[in-house]
Length: 77
Image (cartoon, rainbow, N blue to C red; front, side, top):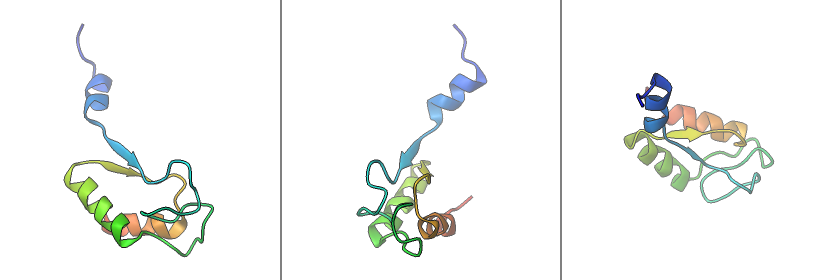
């Protein structure tokens, strides 16, 4: 069996969701059901920085508007 381009992509694609069950807020960020003006916590900022060093994409669904833009401000590339 040979690998397709799709297989190769899925083998190397990594993503982490900052929210799973609590859409209001958690230790990393504010979610879509929380205050739209609240974003990443300092711990959340550090988590995003570490994710970038490990080539992991932050999955931004269900984040507040401010959390989304905080992640975009930290994005490198």
